[in-house]
Image (cartoon, rainbow, N blue to C red; front, side, top):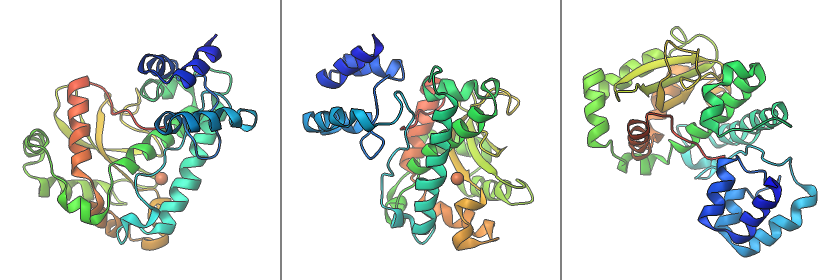
Length: 277
Ligand SMILES: [Fe+2]
């Protein structure tokens, strides 16, 4: 029944049907190459036909997907080099997604925010690979080219929250860099600016692929609005052991429009930011 509804959704392409599909983490077969469910809708009938034609050789139904980057691999240079971006996105993120889908094969595949909330209960495969998927999908979309980054702006609402929590943007960056230093966050992990239920901001670090949305990782659930991957795979090709250099160069590719949007979303919804894929 779900399959036939989803097939109908593909053919009809109506908002209602799409919503139905999404709410079920749709059981639509997904092309394993470059076409996602989202792409099929965006590209219209021809893509739908192509997608249906590919049904015989596609990935398992209702799979999570690696979202395409919104920019070329070289777009973040010189802060993050193209080879690092390619390996990071195409290999590391893709492996998390493949392992997540494998871990959930034959089981319910809830919306990503629900998956994060219950990741610890779901066991290490979901915790590590689900976290790896969410964190990277979140990370790609908060970055843009250095030229565009300079033109992005912190919203008034976010600026006020930053001033309240840290005193100023410069102070927030300073504290963030200190939190991301190897001495403060030993080994692999992430540094986040998060909002609590009241919209108040704080800095936190999480180990491995954990994130603040997961119940049981921190003293409470928090909603990330900005996050930095400090695993060595995120910077080692260019920076080797110089993690602080990577962290300070990273500010040049942050998209503050997106971070401001993230803050709006978490304040309005009292929930995490959904990610693509
Ligand atoms: Fe990573």
